[in-house]
Each structure stands twice: as structure tokens, then as C-alpha cells.
Length: 118
Image 1 (tube, rainbow, N blue to C red):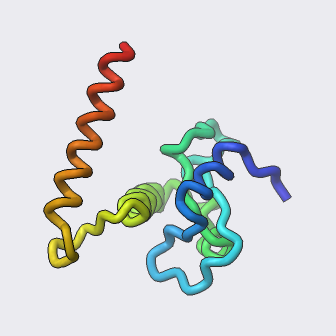
Image 2: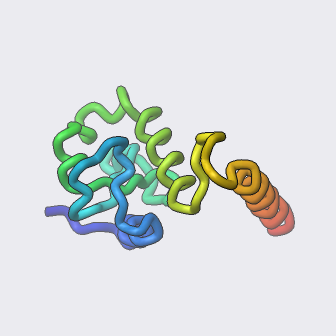
Image 3: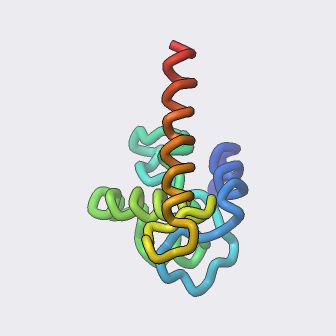
């Protein structure tokens, strides 16, 4: 078994050990998966890691066909991250507008901080 990277373990913890695969019915043994594999030059960075349970990680053949589904993986990752912090892409959900406003303000604050560091 491959050793998990520190970033991978940290990311999975930040995601509260929840599988990002839509409709996952297992959810056990959540681990980090590098969307672009490190073995072919992918970065060990948070933007390249998705949290998946061991069943979804193995049964979807993500390592052998990552180039065919990388957009899907990034979409699942983005959706899971938004949901983890209380934002759902459903206008009918409670507090949608408030959550959207807060998400935009948070993104803006990140942009301002990044600009200041330059």
C-alpha cells in the first residue's frame, strides 16, 4: 500500500472524512486521491486532491482513466467542498442567498490577501 501524503491526510480531515463521489453509499475509509497522479507529474497540492472512500476510489478505475474523467473529479471536488462549508448549489435550500454572498465575500477576501502578498 502506498504511503499517504501529509497534504492528502490533511485534506481528507478538512473534508470531515466525507466521500466526494456523488451518490456514495459506502463512505468508509475515506482517503485522498490525486486527480492528476503524482506518478505522471501531478502536484501534491490541495487543488489536486479529492476525498474518496476506498470503495469509490478503487471501483471507478480512477488511476487508469483519470484523463477521461478529470473534469468530473474536479466538479465532484468543488461540489463537496462547497457542501462541506454549508453552500449548496440549489436555490431552494435555506439561506442560499446569504451563503452565496458569504462565499463571494470569502473569495474576494482571499483575492485581496493574495494581492497583498505579491
